[in-house]
Image (cartoon, rainbow over all chains, first blue to last red; front, side, top):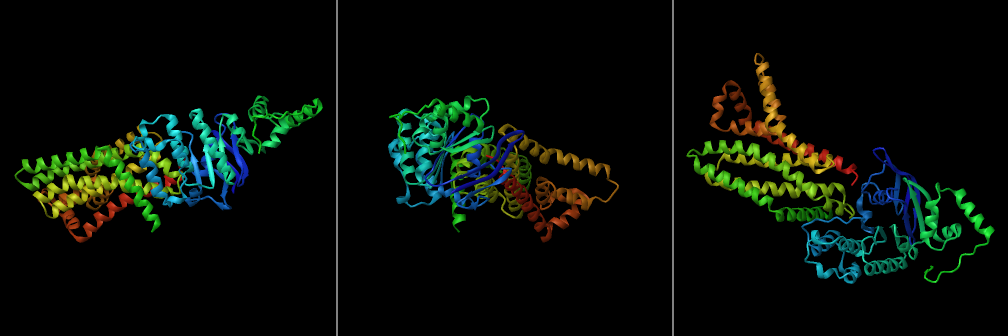
Length: 265
Length: 261
């Protein structure tokens, strides 16, 4: 559905993206993981056309994204820091986007607006909202037009546990509808139950892009957090390192025990 | 058709945002009070127009640039939000320009237009209004170019102020210097070209020559009057003003299209 070929991006001297290649398909939930400043948001913004890559191509449904913005009607984007016009009221914001997108009412997905209770704050101006409430607005906007692709940049950061749970439920629901979902997050336990694929970025380089089952086997950890921590602890991550880990585990005969709290797909 | 509709919708929201901020209302009121009191103080309405012209040539470019720059940086969030929607960058910037330009022009037309139409309707009055409107659009366009180029608000406003300073004050000094140093040569044609390189000068000359004061300007004045008084001269003024609007705006569009946001 989205194909990325040899994307490079530099900000002055800093290399933000270094020759990234990947293919994302429908029904996948891809977790973008990596330390701060590893290029996750830049990659997302390149897919959205907000950052123009220095070289390389991005295809959306086999069409090169280059100028024509209509492909973005199939993407719902939840930014890391939702910034909205200060003077606008919450209700106006939703009205404006509906007006601009010109989507009929039956195609709207207002589940999150209702579950987050956003209707009660429709009269409040955006500038008075707290960070968490802004996140809720961003989330509701991303899901509003029931897009085929959801791009969520740190969706649960700043949300209270209850709202975070509502959002996760919603993501699972959309996943079941065979949509492509891209998530970045540092809260790896949130990703555990959602993700099907892991993309690990470091200093703009894609260190690996693997299915979660494969990753679990290779690291011998059931929890994504522990698996990634192992990888991050390793001074330099390499394929050899994985091989060694796998070898070590098979020698020691460690069999990962089933964890009941883990919801496997 | 659909594309134009979405652009109109966007412009509508930009306009709505601007009107709510009330700065534009204060600007309208200021222009209205100044023009009204000038017409009331001076017995002779053409003298009043001359004083009004001098104020407009300073104030309109300054306010247009500063207002546009501040508006651009304040609506950065709006632009960002629109970029994640199926909306081309060209459309976003053009509707921003449409909203800002329309609001500034209408506040000029209300603030200055109504007094001028009441006290001194006629060709001089109309060319004053034309000059004011085109200067508004020219400097809005220039301000869009500088704000798209400059990374932060402080730098953007600084560059806008410098540009205004250049067009309103420094440029005239440079022209005087040239005229003074090369006074032995026939400079009429060259000064004509030089005036086209500064929209403020162009506006000033095209209005002054419609008034009686041009008699004071001697031989050069007569030559100018010949040119600017003719149909070709009017066409020249309009054409150059349009270029001054279109070129910075299209440059701004080009920069904006390649920009990372």
